[in-house]
Image (cartoon, rainbow, N blue to C red):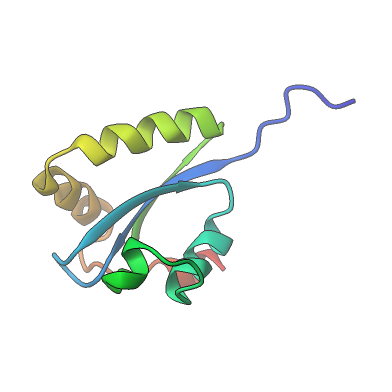
Length: 100
């Protein structure tokens, strides 16, 4: 039995376009989850508002840490989220091709 094995989890932000509609999410499988958003595989906010571009993500060692961070980021002012995106992705490029 393997103990102490940690699986990465991710907090991510999708955008409809630069300075457009934002969506904050959490997942343990970033590639699969973003594929689902991009292909409108699940009904909901991102499908309704066409929010498909991965513009920021952050890796965490546990799903509990990722969920805590997601809740925190969701409470932030929009301007703070935009500043965080622009620090690491100033051109708001879709990061999905780089993670597949």
